[in-house]
Length: 421
Image (cartoon, rainbow, N blue to C red):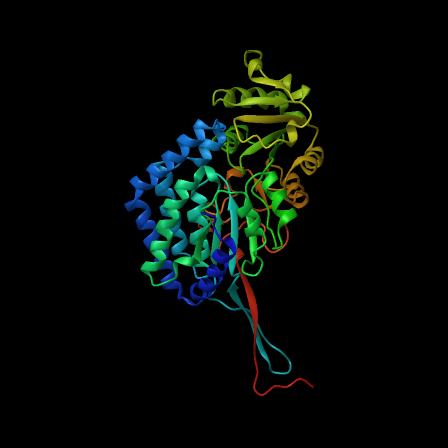
């Protein structure tokens, strides 16, 4: 049966009015009920996910994709915890701002309002289903979700719990629409539902982002891909740097904020590169090196390193592969990052305040890190509870998009019989 996406979007638009007018206590109660349901129904949710994972394996899907697709008891518990965190965040619609009294006596302010209906297209990661639904509801929005065909069973099971939580609080289930049809044509339908949907958020690879930009009649916010860098200079604390680089590369290499390329100042190369190569090789990492950095890889690890080929420094690895390059100084590091970064997550490891200040000033990624792992570019880690995406654009929202980024505002003008002369 073909899903009527335009009807789904119209239903979501009608439901959005009810969500927007509901109290924060009621919207938060939906999320708390959902978190409870995720724990109560864990066995059924994990079984639905198991079917998806086995199907993906049968189709020869790559390992990084399987990792993104897989739910575990720990990951499901974390999703429930994040949902409760979002529920307990301040109401993003509550506080007026920019309050002023004009010389003519008019009292004006701006009042936050929901965007309306979000259309979100994503691949592989079933946690995104809950994250988006939770953030949309808490911020007074509705949403229409289109997950990948490989995670259809997981998403069906999760959306069922979201809808039940909405109905349990007397709110319309249609506030979270789900395109239960894997046909690619449904994406086109979603991209053209401009009469109901305010914003399209694609979460996937470059092909998906390009497809959405080329075919959407709705504003598209893109992000979620990262060729991320850390630059280490000779003043860095090498012991702490090893931990940071390890975390950025190996904690979860299949995600968009994982480290892609390590840049090392020439003055630090001899002292640091052998250490980092040995440390990361023991964690299963292989290396793509420029000739100078390759010369510093210990002889007994040369089977784990190869000379970088054209395009390697422009590749989002999504695996335990790390690019390494020696640079002369921060100036060359900044130039290299400008040439190869997707402006997602880039950072510096240094104790030189002047060098740090220059790096922060000249690197304009959605998040810039100083002596910290790139893995912190995440809505939950930055105090937002969760995120619908990490935007690498500059208009409306940048970086992790949490509750505040899912609102706009309206002007409220209060007078006392004022007329314009």
